[in-house]
Length: 231
Image (cartoon, rainbow, N blue to C red; front, side, top):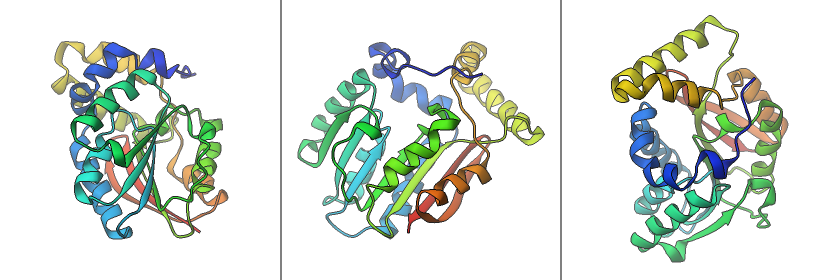
């Protein structure tokens, strides 16, 4: 059984300060995923859109999206206070403080009910226990306007399937190349916190809370990316 993490422990000060360089080696297609997020939202949104960013981390997607459109504004939701400290510094350095509002906590504690024009959840849903994923989807859905997109990217799969085992092995092989002598340790530590849901179960959970279209637009090993449209 994967353990449930404390964000302030898992993503403490030391980890938060080194997160950006580390995650680019850990996650295949990390930069490409953010490019695809921009492409999806660039097609969907008009000027002055309000974007809800769930699991904002160090705000890489906000920096990328803010550069694409200088009128979009963002609400960054992140439960790790050390990560928010790093994110605030990055946002201030980029001159974007007036376009980003931070909420230190989880989506269910966000007082702002929107409605937002779009939402993102990039590389965070794999840390949410399976039995809690539907509630997170619902907390996002209730804050979105009709026809608003949710763009997600995270790890997914059926842990009991051969396909998933092969994809996990491919990811481990990737780490052997990018993390070298740390690969085994990192794989053991990271995989201990992952909560996988099969793709079809995720689609059902999303549709149950009001998303009418769910399309997967990227796949790499155990990682996927989707756009879901609020009904």
